[in-house]
Length: 184
Image (cartoon, rainbow, N blue to C red; front, side, top):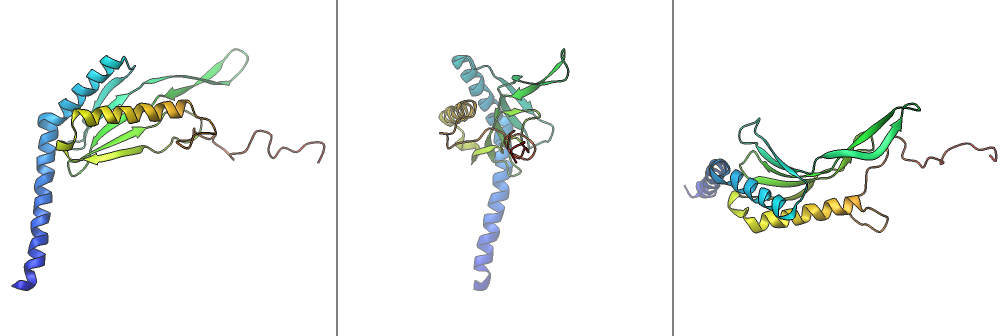
């Protein structure tokens, strides 16, 4: 029987992980979801951040809470003719608390995007947490990281080492690169 001791230990660990999943899902439903929403609402109110909170509950145990900075005209537009312009809409970014399949919660920062201008940057994963790890100070730190990333995105220049703004869709060349001139 000694040859099965290692396997028995691993089976015990497996059962513990399965029990954790059930407990984590229960914690989300009984208290964590509401605690996250309440803290985010408090932060919005206290900081006067122009944001709204959305929930996605379409798939049981894969629910999410999204602090969304909304959308607006980007200031960029396509000139369709002398009288008509098509504005490019900017999605201002969001902070996401998403349940994972195992009941843990992933926190993601979704960067701003401008429709029709480049590819969106991939989300930044802040971390994956057990429900008992998500306390109000953590939510405040997540918000600080989120606002810092949004500020860096908005204030992008060549000195930044962070996220780059989207590159135009196409061949990624300067408007004048590759053009044939009379001098050639």
